[in-house]
Image: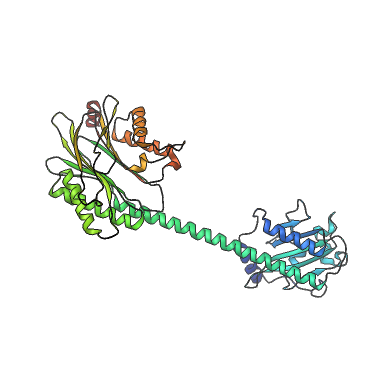
Length: 438
């Protein structure tokens, strides 16, 4: 179709509004160069043996070039007066054989500039619903008459541009959907994780307590857990552990583990008895070829007349608790030898008793901390954690958590598993008096 064969008027406002909406839908305007579109423009120029070719998108008041072959430094032109603006009015190739003899084309900047464009051929880039986003154009500085084969090839290139735009839009939508899926998974994981942990630790007379949960994967529910609750005679029970797996299965196992330990402590708060009770429940619940297991430390705090606290701990396959002593040393309260809970026919659980004096802290943690990798690729392990705590010398539960969380932040991507932290401290006498006077 030549420019002289059809005298098309301006598009109706409603139709142009729909066309511009389609342009916006493809999110293509002002995007960086793309080799796929550059190759199409280059191929168009070669097919016509012409010096210039473009892939153009017609915007509200401009024609923007997604690709421009032979038009160095030119990325857009005004829409009116325009060659592309006229070309999108037609569903077939649009040709200006000699711009000098076409009044509308002669006003175009590419014609009037030093480029001196005389020949112009365009095929519309048309969506499946008939909206013309722009054109694939071929330009020359001499008048000429294209062949039918050339115009058919130009139509094919315009269709190829449309295919690229559809693929690009599909990729954008896929990425957006995945981003939304992950965001929703993260929201659900956070909500579910909150139900698996106590909403807030209770106030414990004569102690400062603090806890934290560090999530390695924001969209996956972890299996770490902790709790602290009162018993009779002024005693307090606490536990911290890690179940196998991730996701919904781990969440169900975590919930069962937490509530089983709480219930067991009501009937028999002996730490080894509580772990043995949990072992029996897990074996009864998860029989057959898919056993479920966990590691845990269960402890009982007993206030003593001298202001210290007796701590009785039992461990089942879990890292040892660490006591930060008043002299700055770090001591492992070992429950080594305690075996996995829910896995073995007759597991052994190891129990020990220690004392926490004023100015001293106790840290329980899951292995996401000690199995993290340092910047040189080495595992942090218990020795690395001990060195860090000895160097920072925290004196309260809050300071202890701050120290460990700073370590986790420093480890960064080296932390690949969730980490639960529970800290207990006996305030130093001077700190206790300050709190009483507040």
